[in-house]
Image (cartoon, rainbow over all chains, first blue to last red):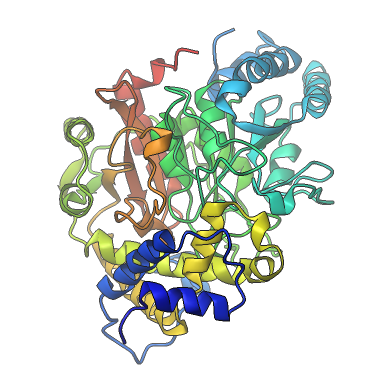
Length: 67
Length: 460
């Protein structure tokens, strides 16, 4: 899946009803590419069978052991 | 009256060498003189401060002091709810917000006898800034008011460094205590996840948010944390664990302590300036000379920790602000609006993969910590930048040195370790095992007492 181009990004924001008058699109797109770069640079998790850990405790902590 | 540490003030108050009212008036005077330039305070609660100070003084005259913090002047980051006192999150969205309750930590510190001087500047909703399109200016660095304080506990760091308060509260989701502490030359600890209640604190990202203290020294932070920590059923993530004496190990020998230096973080992944590299090297020399065992700790790239943190933070923040983004879009500042728009492009898969990666990185750190008691790296890569040089997408530019400890929930403290070529503070970071904050205070206090940096204050 490729990243959104600047024009796609503008279309998408307009379609979502975002008030676009005060948005500098070039700068937003620059940030978008930085964020996507960050996502893409993160290694894919080794184990996709593990559950999603949203409720989180530091490993080996008294909390982890008691739960 | 020179700026005090909390420990000094506590001793002098107990010995009746100073009174809480004198101390409160001294701080209020400094706020009056310095705040127009520094902008650390959004709201000054002078009447409340004098009432608190008078009550503390009455207790002292009857030898009924509550805690070592009785009569000590503090203030709160403006995302902590304070009953009857404006709580804005430094945002136009909450410009008129006056809560009816105190945040749990605010209440704990009030119950400890502290004197509350007011509410402190932050980045908008503890996320985006510095911004000049909000109802209040951003806080400025007391070492050079043209420079950034770091964020988001900017006002707390600036007010402590400027001697307006002796300590205060901060929150840390991606370095928001340790970053400003580093750039303003003070100490600040992000305790273990769940150590301090977040009840009554406006969230940024619920699975990464930590509450912690900021003060001139690590010892002062230990004294504050002593009163802030503790289980609170009102925060579902609050840890039901005993609160130890956080100052117990301060002054004890470091002999045999195993210290890991995470070289790759500050040499490879986010290379620090020469002065900070020298500060880390000096710290290591001091630790070796004290009898600690020092080795290299090997972890994954800082980019990995940073990416997972940033994805989770932005996604959780976007969920929190979703309604306001739909209904009050223009009330946000430009930086905040843009950050939230960006976050709306994260997918559910991005968030889930980041949480899975987080699990793996937690296990990695847990394994490494079997070999070490504490880890050392930089708290900030360089001295504070000029305000105008802070990138618009600050936070997405380079992997953040504090982020591994938010992602994993392990505690970490920032300690001033000298000054750079521009005369601005340098700082190192010490990370520890879950709920072992006392060890961090031990190591941080050793470094502070082995160097002259705590005797240097900003010229104001």
